[in-house]
Amino acid sequence: MSEVEDPTGPPSDLKPPEEIRQKVIEALQTCFDPEIPVNIYELGLVYGIDVDESKGEVGIRMTLTSPACPVAGSLPPEVEAKMRAIPGVTTAAVEVVWDPPWTPDRMSEAAKLTLGMF
Image 1 (cartoon, rainbow, N blue to C red):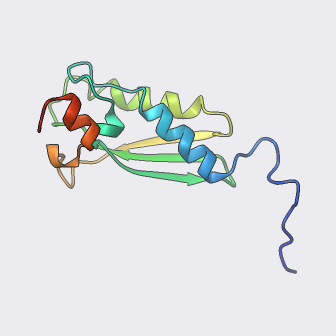
Image 2 (image 1 turned 30 degrees about the vertical axis):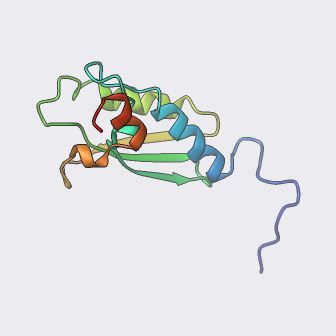
Image 3 (image 1 turned 90 degrees about the horizontal axis):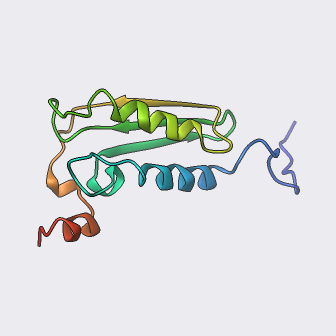
């Protein structure tokens, strides 16, 4: 049996992956390391965003500026909570990884400008 595209779009409780992904990025841009006035997305701390629109699942792969980061215990749960608050997201998981190590080279141009790194 072949799949037939539904002209009405996805069920109302599911969002297209591009829409969820954009909402995830917007939510990540509201998460800050309190010592750095730049959000974690622009800092380059987010290594990957996985969206499974069929299940409403979001997975975030991220790092911190260092293993001794003072927000190591609070930032990942904050990110997870903000992901779960996005309409269409049923589950969210945050994985903190250390490889590759974070460096300032991962920062966006906007972040470097904000921090005067030019």
